[in-house]
Length: 239
Image 1: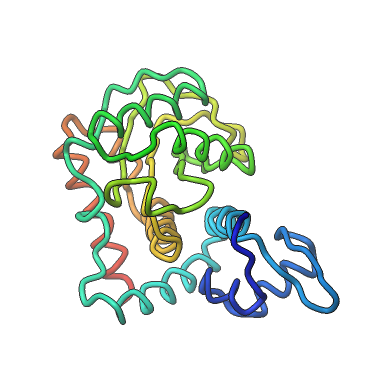
Image 2 (image 1 turned 135 degrees about the horizontal axis):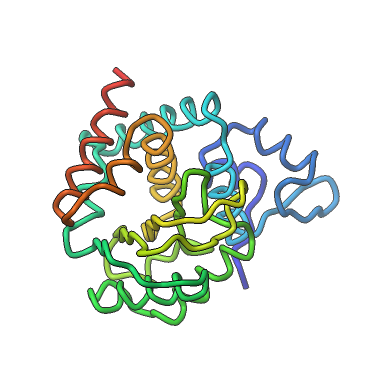
């Protein structure tokens, strides 16, 4: 049985103000069940809604969200640079050959399995499919950020991100109906960290030249430099 959360537990789980969740319940934007005067949330469904919310935030909403999560992370970790911890040259495929949404997910899981990053590849594939069925992780601009429907620390050997650049763009369900050629598989194993990584990466996509750079690079090492430079640029804007 999935974990059930009270209203306050759900706010703490997602690290969002109570009013944000209250409005989402009012307009039935988030899955919930009512018992008397109380509302309860399934943790798995809440995780998926939380990530969908981050991906859908407009620029004026994303910036304060990212700033708030950065401050919270800074309380736990003095150095809040994320991507050197998640991305390595071996995690980059600049000649990705998947041609459909299903084959993208399948090949990303295979990629992670070859790197010995997974405890349960079949479960990860199921979770990725479930998350994409909930709502596409593709963003305007030709990038998608697939991730598990629910963050499970027993699914992965360590937190990681894979980058795949497709030979040919794939239709992946972006809101503007554009095709996608860049895929970042994000597996953090912990929900709060996961939402923070999503917010940071969305800021990098929207406020820097990351996508253009990733399409022009020649080596995995260039990809690393592009991510690290983009992240430093976003962090510098906060100070």
